[in-house]
Image 1: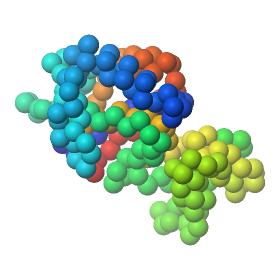
Image 2 (image 1 turned 45 degrees about the vertical axis):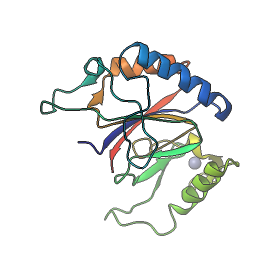
Image 3 (image 1 turned 90 degrees about the vertical axis):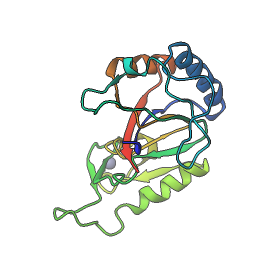
Image 4 (image 1 turned 45 degrees about the horizontal axis):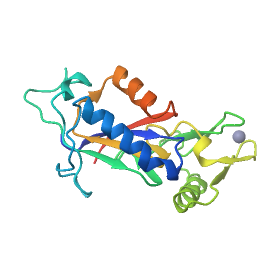
Length: 195
Ligand SMILES: [Zn+2]
């Protein structure tokens, strides 16, 4: 299960505030014994992450996991990032925040609709570059910020701060709720997947 990951993404923090907020949350996780204090744990394709702490079992639901299991590192990203769900990051539709209708990316036979994804793909590039990223709705013709479109949360989340837990069983709802409070009550999204 080492390739399974869950990322808690802060949707509201600014890039300037991301690093100091990350430091406060890491200090809280260390104080709670959820992670260890030093970045010693290897993380695939990234700098080493924080190792799991002695109280990891209190914040996860490991009921479906065979014993013994060993959680991996926690990676913290503090720059503008598109967090995706790895091999399953393939949304079938997205919902316009204004008219609340779905823009489909696949037809009924689950075949890709040519060109349907292009406005989103371009907006993702703009968002990553830090410029205005708008997507025009094919139903109501209005343009809305990429980050306001819904229905892609299980595949993508956009934010300047993300905490990726590698190889941990599912984080408990109570832990995620407290996590959100520690992120100053910002809107958060949980992205999970495998690579
Ligand atoms: Zn619309």
